Length: 211
Image (cartoon, rainbow, N blue to C red):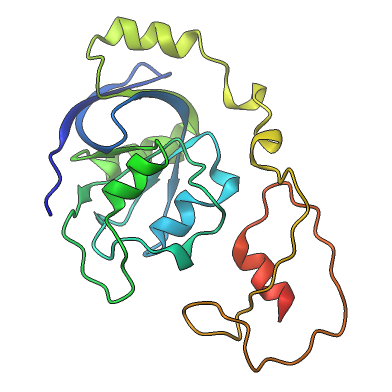
């Protein structure tokens, strides 16, 4: 099923104003723009708690082509503010896929930005460093976006550790010994219990510890 892309606008704190398209959540959102050079794993990145409060610019040009699935989640939710990609592929093809990236972002209220020059953005971030930005699929006025950005707390002034930390004790029972469903079967009996203080730990780290 194809996704109907919406118009979107981006304003960065260095004064750069850009027009693009959007998918995922229909929203106005503020966060820190960074880039990621991974060739795959966009779902893992979006659900990685360490990206909380950030818009992740992907240097890989085609995003969305393998869909999403529950097994590739690094946490219970998507923590990034949004993702910025050159080309979004709404038609996915993968035997493990359970849904589209667009539906995933809508479910977790995360913006997706596409049809934009990610090479330009990456080079700018590489030169000037990570910076705050606002993206909107509802507001097109540059001055209004600038005002929203100026009146929103910066990422360093927000306690995202409190936001992504686990609130209740839980027991992790899956391992990298297992199949794609992460069922812990026929693996050696653990020799010790490991206590992890979860301030936003990735699922993959817990799986490595469990083996």
